[in-house]
Length: 275
Image (cartoon, rainbow, N blue to C red; front, side, top):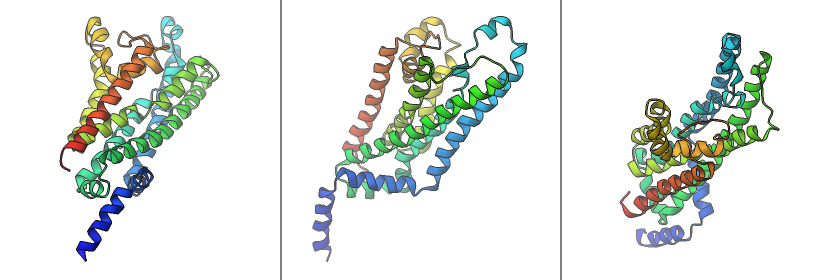
């Protein structure tokens, strides 16, 4: 019986289409309770932290110096929560790739899908779409929530009809899958949930932690080459003046290069080494 069913299984595996792999990955991702918890937590943290910061700023704004009040930027203050949501969404990207290594299910997945690149492509596509939707919901929700709170304190506000606001809100939202995709790649590279989470959060936070402590030359020539500042220069560089941000076009190309490098490295190792 084994002799008759094994060839059939191989034929079925060879004839599997990308849509089949995509449906399988969708089922695995959304059959896990952690998916819903993680995504909703990311959305909730984004909105909640923006509300807290906006309330804190509004209640103390009259105590600020005149120069600080004059340079107040309402767009960025309303998007501060994306830092916390971005951390959670990055963890989600890692879990999409590492969960099967932790359970050992990756062997069954790669047996059912001999073309391993399809597995990575399906996971990457789902992470992009799912996180993109939640990230966009986060940024739009944060913007309106933040502006409403700031406006209640008679503080300067911005409108989504402003081009600067549109670029920041929609740019940040639509590129929200950037770090989750890097996290997914690191999960395949390291095969470790803890290691991949540590690595992606290090890439996400290093410029923020050390940027203000290093000399200007390091910010311009070293930190500006990292994925975070490169991406930020393209989406918020027009409203935030920082020596870490390269030219927006250059930054966008650099961010794309980092993403191609991460996913490409994950693909090469997934194809070449044993499960």
